[in-house]
Figure (cartoon, rainbow over the protein chains, first blue to last red):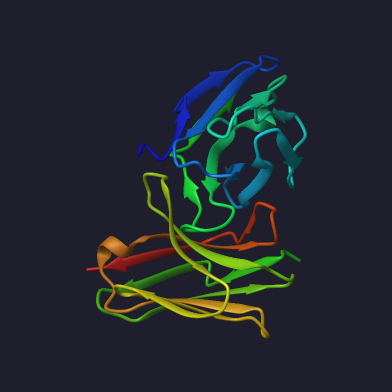
Length: 114
Length: 108
């Protein structure tokens, strides 16, 4: 299994540009989530999904959209990038019931908005 | 006040010492996670607890649900244990709420 994969690993955007951070998992996990990590703030939840077709907002959802059309993929869209969105973004997945309930994290995407 | 508080924020110890990192939380939870983040940035799940105690190698995690407190212990610490250790709580089907992490440095 590849686990949780994220692309790209690094990205530089100009203010106002849009882009999509990709996240995929091959473990048939129901739960998927996006977090951002900022110095001194710890990790914060942006959006999460409990299954295909179901998404919900986390602590810091403004400026981001998500969709979950398949179990495997959970892309995060930045609609109009702002310097405040400069951060490291992590995608994570886990089983809903049965199996190992631990969270599996992707390697992260380091985003800089200038 | 943060829902998840960790202490200490920074810890430097000598190789071989017994390490304790504490986590307190203020909300009802379904589970508590301990995570490790190395300088390269990757995050690895160490434990998921809903009660009692778990042990994996030199790592031990405990949780007291009534006191809303968990501890992560490292026995016979080694420089390769140097990392950021993060406590996170889970409430039902929601995503995780994280502490700010404990920066651990083990000196040879």
